[in-house]
Image (cartoon, rainbow, N blue to C red; front, side):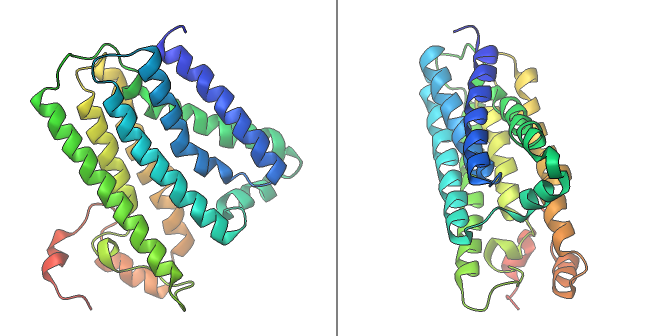
Length: 258
């Protein structure tokens, strides 16, 4: 036990290395997506037991709820599809004989680095003895983001399970309000967690967490990657024209669904 920062580095390195070995044995790097949420659960509870304060179990419980649900959702999707996610399969093919080292460094270690950055609010110590009013606001924001993401994923899963839905664009429910409601919920919940943990340790360090989540999902691996996959399709272009990418257009709640 050294410090929350260093201990988390070592924990994440060991965790992601084990996941890499399992993924290489299975020849499926997309297993890392299942491990993403569970990694935060491991970090949160380790920090709670090794560096406790009066309510440090609260963020651990919230992260467990989020990470556990995400792992079950992605794991269930992988079990149904029975193959490596198209993005990782594409990279494996492009990397050729360098697939092993590049998988370890560019998939598992890179995600481990981002895991450490996103988990920064959980590492902040010490915490105040009691919750302040704005922390309750942060908790409510977290709940709203969690529910938005969970409902979006559930709606998408139900849509994909329908006969004849393969290849079609989901435009119902929360997906009617924005093109990526699950990513919107994810961003919101991390900003909520940051606000909840604001008086703990150094807020300006933990601010990197929601900023990086927002950047990753809006500029790197989230929205841009999926938009590129579907761009040029007439149905998607029509959907894109009338539906915002991330923040929901709440005015549509008062319109009749077409």
